[in-house]
Length: 56
Image (cartoon, rainbow, N blue to C red; front, side, top):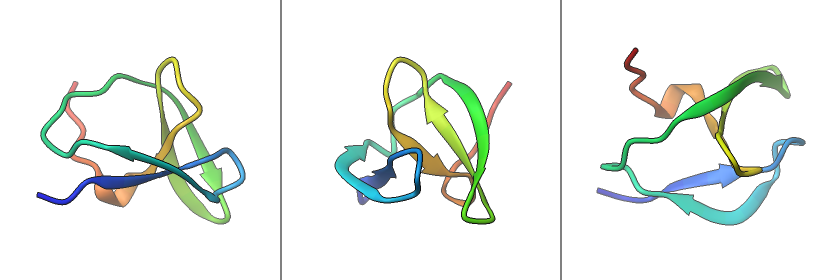
């Protein structure tokens, strides 16, 4: 599987990647440029909601 690009708070690619098979904790949800993003806890890395499979 391909790594997921992560973005900063303004929606710009920040040259970081998330591993697709890894479990992350998200601590924030925001609308950035009209799209929903989730923030990886303890970082400034945001991932588009459409790229995620969320579990409770």
